[in-house]
Each structure stands twice: as C-alpha cells, then as structure tokens.
Image 1 (tube, helix red, strand yellow):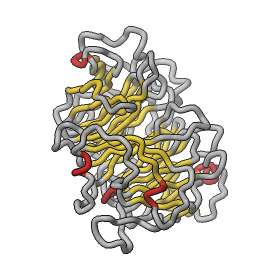
Image 2 (image 1 turned 180 degrees about the vertical axis):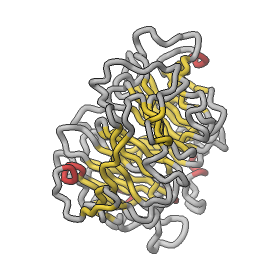
Image 3 (image 1 turned 30 degrees about the horizontal axis):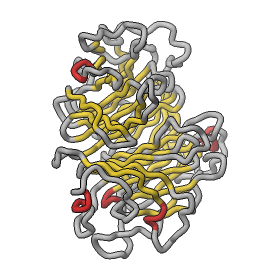
Amino acid sequence: MPNHDSHAVESLQTESVSQTTSSNDEDRLNKDKEPPAFYAVAFYPYSALGEEPAFAIASLDGRSWICRPAVDHSDVDDPAKDIDVLNLFRDEEPDERYNALCWSKEHLSGTPLLCLAGEKGKIKVLDALTGKLQKTFVGHGAPILALATHPVTPRFIASASEDFTVRLWDVDLDDENLACVLMCAGGAHRAGVIDIAFHSTGRFLLSCGFDHQVNMWALPNLLDGTLERDNVTVIHFPHFSTREVHTHRVDWNSVDFYGDLIVSRAMEENCIRIWRIHGFEALTVMSEPSRYSAPAPTPGKSATRSAFGKGLTILLTLDCPNSDPWFLRFGLFNRPPQRTALAMGNVTSEIFFWDLQDVEQGRVSSVDTLNGQRVIGSPIQKHTPQNILNPSHSRGKLEVEWSNVTWSRDGKWCVAVGNRGSIAVMKGREGGT
C-alpha cells in the first residue's frame, strides 16, 4: 500500500515544463488564472518493469501533460518537485475540455500514443513523444466521458459517450472514417454512458451510465475477420444488465473488473461495492449468447437480465465517506501475484486505500454485517496529502476534490488528480503495493 511519503502539487504551472506545442502555452500558464480541473490520469502501461514510469494528465482547459514521478520527491518546501514534466500539449480547439484519456501504441513501431477526448465528442490521437496529432476520430454525437484500451490488443480503444453508446476504434487504420469498427447500442443504455472497463481477456466490456445501470457486453474476436471493415458492427443487446447493485436514484460512475468479479460505485452512496454475476467465469464461458437477442429476465429479479442465468450477489461494501459527487472514480491495482489494492479520493482532500488481499483473507478487523453484506467500516489506510500548493490564491489549507486515481504498472506509484489542478504523487512499498 502507498506510504505516507507523499505530497500534492496544486498545479503543473511550474518552470519544469520542458516542451510545448505552442509558444502561446506560456500565456496559458498564467499563475493569476484559476488552475484547471483534472478528471483524467493514467500511467503508460507498456513500459518494461523497472523502467521509470510515465503518466498522462488531461485538463478541462484542453491541455495534457506527460509526467513522471521525481526520483527524489522529498522537498517539502517545493512539492512541485515531486513531478518531472516531460511534455505539455495544447488542443488546437480553444474550447475543448478533456474528460478522458487512455494510452495505445503503434503496432509496428511501438511509438506510444496518447488518446484524448472530451466535450467535442472527438478522439484525438497524439504521438506522445512529439505531440503531433496523428488522427482524429469522429462519430459520437455528444461529449465523451471515458476511454479504455483493449488489454490484449492495444490497437483497439473503447469510448463512452453521453450519446448513450459505446464505440470501439482501431487506431492502426489509416482511414479515419473507417476507424469505428464496433458499437454497443440499441437502447441498452437510456442515458449517457459514464464509464467503461475491459475484462483482462478482452472478451467482455462493462459500461455504466446516468440511467443507473451497468451492462456487460460479450465482444467478438477482433482479429479473426468477424468485424466488417466497411461497416460498423453493432451489438444491440448486452449479455448482462442490472440496476440492483446500487439504489435506482443514483448514477453509476465508476466500474471495473476484479478478476471475474465487478467493482462499482455510484453517487450519493459513499461506498464502493464488490459483486459477482452468477454463472459468469470468463475463461469457462464456452459459447457467447447471440448479440441479436436480449437475455431473458432473471426470475424474480426484474431489474437484472442475464445470459448467464442466475442474477448476482453483492460480496462486500467498502465505506468511503464524503464521496457523493458523480465524477469521482476509484483506481484498482490488480496484477497477480502482487497484492491487489484499491484507492479512491473524496471531496475533503482524503485518499482511501484498501488492501483487497487482506480483505479476502479476513485480516480486517473493522468488518460489520449490514443487511447480509460485509461492510468495511473504515478504509485500511486513510491519507490526506499535505503541503498543497495554491499559486492562484492563498497558500493555506485547501480542500481538494480528488476526481481520479491511477496506479503504475508495477504498483510502486499511485497518482491522484482533482480540482484546481491538484495532483498527489504517492510512492508505494518497494516491490509493489
């Protein structure tokens, strides 16, 4: 788990910016302006273990940064030194607001690609080394709220939009007009889609949205010729759908696979839930349900429809106080055989950590039972990053709303981002979490 050797940087508006794509960026680094909010952050997932990790951040004012944790980040007088800024890019559209990012790489050269999306409903694919815009994908009819990279074949990325759809794109195709190869649509979501996540096998995709619903889609083999290159393949119905894990009055806004289990949270509940779909084991599902027919309703469970037959069970609830807003997302580190860790921030500057291996093995003392569910009364570790720099206003204590958390590939680093350009860089234990 991350230790307490961490600091927060209130803004990337520092002299360590080494490269920009435009001389006008100096004007946009004006310290008299309110620093932008960060909603998106992700470590580059393809670096070799042992290499210094790099991560990207995207802001609501159309800028993106590529950074890495400083080797020596112990200067309490200057928390900005916790981060080395490698590149700073600015979107050419001045009113673009980034909500999401993910990483990919070119199939032949291995060049790292940074994919960005936001209010314009477009996906911008940049060469992460030069900042050159490689491609622009257009197709969504509303803002994009999430991006995710296929875990097996990184040439494919998925996007979630307020236009009620999830789309899959091939970043290797030269023709940008043919880049959208698959769409999950057909009325499964009745409102905007907030978050998406791939299963580690790449065969299944989770989506959740403003309609209080989570769907799981079975994807075709992306490389066996099943996809029609001249037409978008449409999956009309999910293979699992539910509104039962969280109350119907809230919006799902963070979801991920934990092996074959699912982790999710929703606004106004101040908790994270871990649950399983009965009958679902990705590696043993031999036949995929037809994508042209909806699964039958589960008997006695009108809010759940499952092609796997038996509904769901909530296994665990993690208490996360002061995490009401819809835009807060957790970060899950799950890379066996290393210990699995979960992190999430709230709106009162705190960041919570759970060692899920300890939870699974019953080594957590603060476990209660509520309505038949195991409830962790408090996180395994709670941390409030100190020494927050506030260049725009006073340098006193500043309440931060942590909107997103990410882990490095080896689990040695955890980074959280939030409003007013806030960044927390946290170093984990040697050897991972």
